Length: 140
Image 1 (cartoon, rainbow, N blue to C red):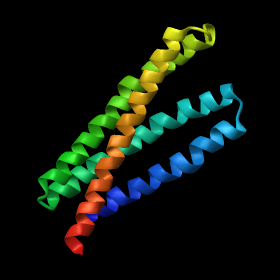
Image 2: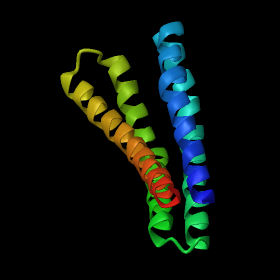
Image 3: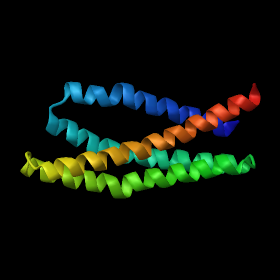
């Protein structure tokens, strides 16, 4: 049950980010300021996601639910990949795009890298959704 509570809390945090933080940043800040904000924000978000993944792993294994534990481990690994691989890649490409704003190859690389990052973030959310849904199914 605690695993589902952790997963539900993370789903709430994801929802707040996607529905309020992200659109507000782009509606209120000029691009250089938005970029500076997001470069500071995303590492914190991904570190928190790693912690949530570890908490789900511990809670899942403590409840003797190997699948929940595995989902938590996968979530932590996906978040770590976002933090230590994709974030740096995205930032490097964005910096190069500042110098070459019409470079189609850089735009494509940025889109693919950003898409991969969003997909990893989304997969963690889907794992949490599955945990919550499975727990509710067992309760009801």
